[in-house]
Length: 318
Image (cartoon, rainbow, N blue to C red; front, top):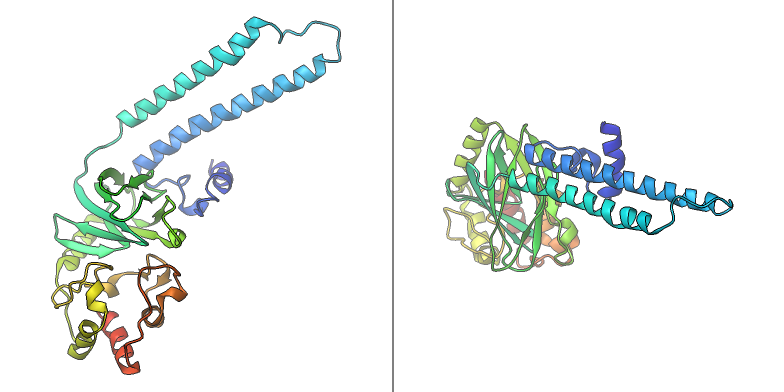
């Protein structure tokens, strides 16, 4: 069973850049499993139709060289094969699809708000007053209700192993309910072309045991613990504070990700690079090297000492 799924993954998901081990053909939640079931039904019906059509084509080619009349000629065959059978197949698929849609969850036990920007994700937990970016933590075994918004252009939120896509449309809110059956990391992405760095607009969903999630979200709701006043002053004095927020300080910019607990995140640049001091230093100096077209410009106002202190400061914000 897993073999044919991986074979299909090569064809159906290569264009999206999603591998078999992290794609929709390897579901880790009830929503994704239901969608795979619907896909499987449609796939095998399509295979059956192709086999029948090719069989009829071969039969027609063989019959062409015989004198006997072909059973595949005549008005009745055209009506039945070209109208009745396709209509029944499509009606059947429509009925299965409607049954699937009617069974979908529309509300969740945990609310998460996601705003898609070029080219990153802002994540809010309104019931916990917590904010993060590009990394979404959810508890295992819980229906999570996502409210999706696209403040700038149309994006599409997609975590293949947990469920289907949902568009983020400027001026509208979209709701999507996902459920993780087991702990793990699930990679997602923007599935609607949104500009130059569309391919690098990724998201990491981390499913945790409920107790671990509660501990994490409480930490994310807290203000930053600042241990280096000079580095904080350098952050606020330069362009950083105009774009980013660090709760507990005077930095309250809204153009870029909230950096309050920056060091607790596993990646930077929307899952572009591992969150390591060397990558942070290079990103601050010139993010355009890694994500050409990203909204963050190169930072040239720091002295070498300020640059290093800022890196140390950010990588200590847990």
